[in-house]
Length: 218
Image 1 (tube, rainbow, N blue to C red):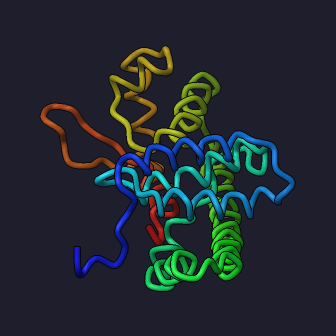
Image 2: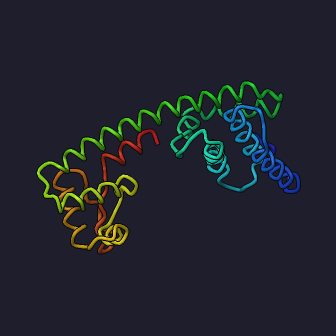
């Protein structure tokens, strides 16, 4: 306790504070939603209600709040990397609020985090779009009509499920096991899918280029 950088409130105060935060999140307010998101994140991290996972939940609240307020239509803002890269400043700025009530410097830092994360998200989306166009053209090149329908379905599925096995994929797509297995073979031949190490008897395949883009800086 003597060496702790921050000591959160006792359980009774914590429960009251979480209740107040919930009310604030659901109340009408004239503040810009991004400023409100900054205050909500700070307050949640200060309440620190859990033994573990407060950082993850606090970052998730940012995304959920901004989606609730229609600022985002999809959870495309990955703010964690910015906060990790600027971890010391992140902690120092929250401490500045706790010690001196200086919210303005925290909000400016948070808005910088949102701006840089949004720019990264746009860049990632551009890369994924270019990859989609490249591989769509590759798939349609010299492919029979009947097979192309299966390939299109499998390729669309891969863009939301980039790690697959044949059995579960055939069930999800409503296609036969053999049809999906043939499509997987085509995607491997064209360099779109790669096979991972087996899990028992199950063969696992990855859309590696797609995953590489998503995993950058994470």
